[in-house]
Length: 134
Image (tube, rainbow, N blue to C red; front, side):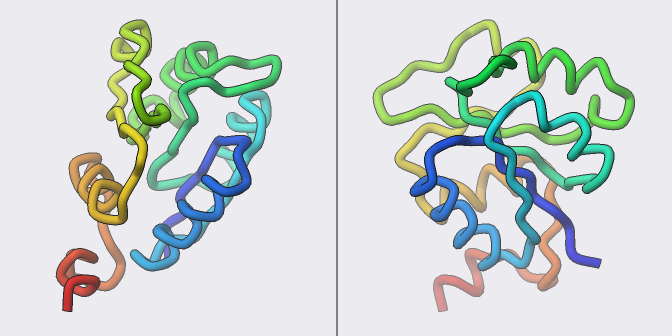
């Protein structure tokens, strides 16, 4: 069964880049543009990992979303990667939620390494960097 990767972001170019990276490593992509849509999607999709934009627009901000995800038994142990744009420093308040910070620009290698460190299992049986670097 192919694992799902949930992207929570609003920038269409960034979403497309992550979609390309994600499909290359053999994961299925779901996406949400707003934090308020995430908890229902987590229950429906059961993602292997969630990637969240640090400055999420909308009613539910990133910190509130992380708090809700960690409070819900269905998502409290899910690996969560939070990304920020180049030059931004991670909001120290977010680190209390057990997240992995991914600094942009996000390369394929940094993306795969962050997934590996988060415990994501790759479906091909080999590490994607081994396949990609052939």
